[in-house]
Length: 321
Length: 308
Image (tube, rainbow over all chains, first blue to last red):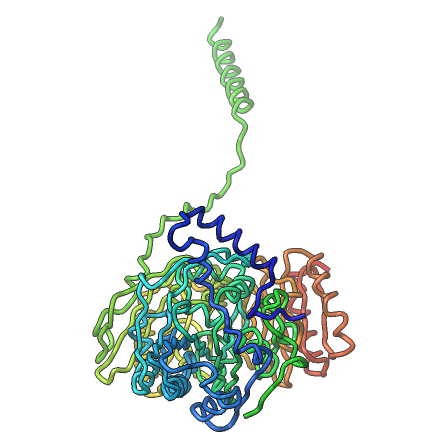
């Protein structure tokens, strides 16, 4: 039975409180208890999106911008996610010092379409950011995302060391605490916009892997037991929406790529509120050759086993835009 | 003692002395010792990076950076996992820019052995690149040039523009002229049949590289089941006729036989060929005549190495 991520049962609540209390010690009764403050550092999807937990929207063939608009409509429109005055954090993949046609970063047209939709819905502030692998001053520019996002009306922000808060991960099996970007918790709406690529140890980098871009700390450490760690992250960071850019997918030599030979033009956008479901759908339907276990590998399987999202295609509702 | 007796006594004494000396100092067999290895100067890898202006029209942008050990994840994130399977030591990298705001990044990776450098280059070598006479197995493809030399893998990666091919090759050549050439490709590469071979250079790896562009892995089996690890070596190539052939050397015969058993359920379904000779396993992705011929040739080449 898939656990509803928007509700936690009594036993889980108590376990979480005990773990947080132990982690932070006893605080004075005056003021906000530490465990309550820490509890606020979990990002859970709002109950209002519960009906979309196992829904996947798919658009193909219209180009990146139009496909993005189409999947948002298929999920009920951006208004389901963004309210007037909302602070929206948009997290694309801007990790690599690569040009857009090299497929290593999210397509800037997809990012721009998401930003524009949020502002049309009345968002008060839309910020685009990423904790990048390479020098962000270059990656933001050469990826085309910096310029496209600003032109669309977003504020494009560089990440600094002071932007991270360390939080416990009570349900984590491999990762029990880590530093995350504060926007992951502070934003009213978190929209995760990954690009679909092959990856060696992680096999694929899509929605769950893209959340490494809100993580601080040592990247090398995260790559040890990476599959369980990615599942663990999804217990504390649950974006409101995941928009997967599969306009051009990198089917070999990911995540950087070596040449145009590594790319396949598919002209697809996939969207889902649940990042586990989004990844399970992407892994089982996108033309990546030779994925282990039919696409239900590693972190996708681990997250499914933890009840974090539907992974069976047969149990998903697919809305084709 | 008469004089004659004295001479006799001295002679006997001398003889006895010689004999005694022979007994007490047995002759040691002479051993030709290998010359002591000369201590090699530690090469500062950052010194191998071109200064600004080394290639006309290109200036260095920013500082030289070095990422040793697991710090390489800070440089290339998840791509680092591939490098670690080839016994990665460190990488030095620098960016270069021209007046058109086009970029070239030169990265020099130091691996433990020339075989590892060969292997990393074989992983990254573009299928459709054209060979160039730079380093070993140098290839150029839309603004990039990669090769190996000694224990170093050199990647010159520019914007994906054919107009940058010449610059990429120039940067690559500059570095190649300064990297000591202690190159020795993995000996297993010589076991692969040459006729009809499409993959150049053949792939050499220790651990499975998922989604590496190695289509034979997708066809054969889940690579994790093949029990490849840091102690195994695999060479592989694709051939005319639409099949791939791989030769894997395991740590011992038992491991090779266990890996062969993993293929068993697939043998009837997918028309594979699997042969074990000692600790070597030869596999093809087809049972067509060309694959059979290639398999037989590989087994012949294996004879001096594998214990029947």
